[in-house]
Image 1 (spheres, rainbow, N blue to C red):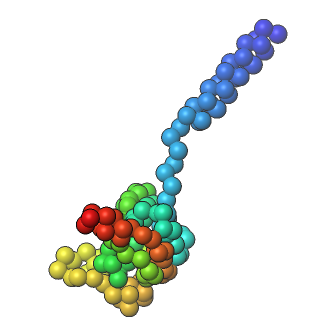
Image 2 (image 1 turned 30 degrees about the vertical axis):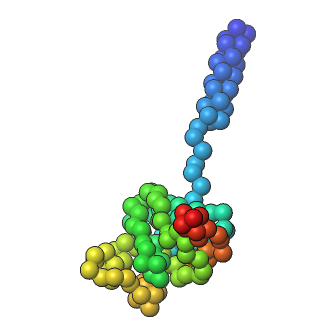
Image 3 (image 1 turned 180 degrees about the vertical axis):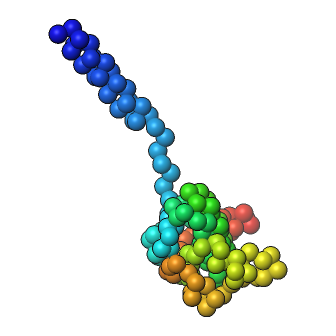
Length: 150
């Protein structure tokens, strides 16, 4: 009987410790976009006016992947399992093409060439794992510039 009480006490302590340690674990940072082997999830995204002009992205694929927004001449390459932030122009708003593709395909198109200005949607679409839209909703960040001028 003492053996049973001792084991039940030890198991109870282990269970409570596990629960408490799990509750203290750092939260997983939120992402706007995840990339998997099939492309971006969600395929299209809308940034509300209160959202900072940046996309937090996590690559869950087993290969390096790229997110590209050609109209902004912006792209980011992420290694497998990596996360990153794609900074967007601060004062821009509207609807933009968004492509997710493998880094190998992006490189084959010359997308990592510093002498090439930007890959066009027509070049990206045939090799993209997914194509969608980024909508930056109207905001009033331009007021920051007006306020500085005063």
